[in-house]
Length: 450
Ligand code: NDP
Ligand code: 2IT
Image: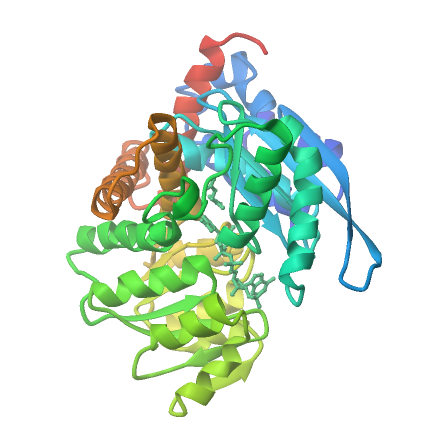
């Protein structure tokens, strides 16, 4: 892929990013998409160049990399690498998830941390951008091994985070179990019970609706897109990739709003249930037993299972919600989806669609939403968890859910109006990047050269 831009200055900046960050293709992809949007406004916002906002924003404020040694159930020592990228704190303490997956590397976490800056800005809350993680694979590990890893990970991370400094949370491979072990270790070392992590269990400071928030928020956002086009979820056929936290609760809310969700997948394959996914079966497989999605057909014999993930995009649908991982939906899949009549694509995962897939959607009348806008409900509700922790209060499910819905509707309005204002109506990629950036750039300039 060539990462060029028409604007000479922005093109030079892009080439500098490539030179300074060797072998980080996902980071280049995220920066390139961002600069392509910024290209639309550099003339009317000369401060972005004069004050070197763009040069500064592509450079993380701090990157921590560390050894994570732990002992497995056989008594053998294992060594993983841990990371925390504290990308930007202009509008609030660093905030973002922790990914535990064997594919994790510096470039992937930098793309995630970079996008988190604009996502968090769009929520309207006071949160800067960060991301962390490790190449540790929780799959197939015992609870004891996961605890051993999480404790070792936190033995180093604790010195870099804090409730007013950096507040990590879940992401791929990190759910309530991992957050619990990390929280316990942080508390043990610091002797402080604070809201230093979000996504905690309810018994020690977690927020109601945080588990559901990313998936529900994605559907609230998609609902705004549907509404703009004079329609709704009612009676629509939906395909959702993934079968993790985001996918499960996107499925739940889409069903509540009257849609029929016909497919889900995990990294081994996908299930197709033309009668509509039975979510209680999926929750039992994924949340209780931590098993493979292929188990679904044992409980629902009328459904089918196929190996491989990309086949899920060959299933005809009106709405596609990619909720698994980056670059899972490529140009070929985009063409198949369009040929089969898809009209709306909203990203639950971070950067799941390749750039050529996004361009294809936009050129073929598909209303497309980028993850940094449509999946912001998770981190927004993390922000609400932080607020509750600071007050030492818990809000009801209904209160949190209503705030989440309001935030998602605001994000849609902001991204949509920004896109229209620059002459690119319905281009939510541009709208989200620019609306997210302007708040951060205003704060960065006001705070001087730091
Ligand atoms: P989970 O770990 O709960 O689930 C991830 C799902 O995606 C699993 O079904 C997993 O399958 C599948 N998956 C992961 N990696 C791959 C891969 N390389 N190829 C194919 N399938 C894969 O994670 P989440 O649901 O929390 O996260 C999903 C996406 O949503 C990520 O992009 C994440 O960054 C993003 N996100 C998450 C938020 C949150 O609050 N949790 C908030 C905003 C965005 P398997 O089990 O087989 O690995
Ligand atoms: O990508 C994301 O926004 C998340 N994984 C959630 C981060 C958070 O701090 O809740």
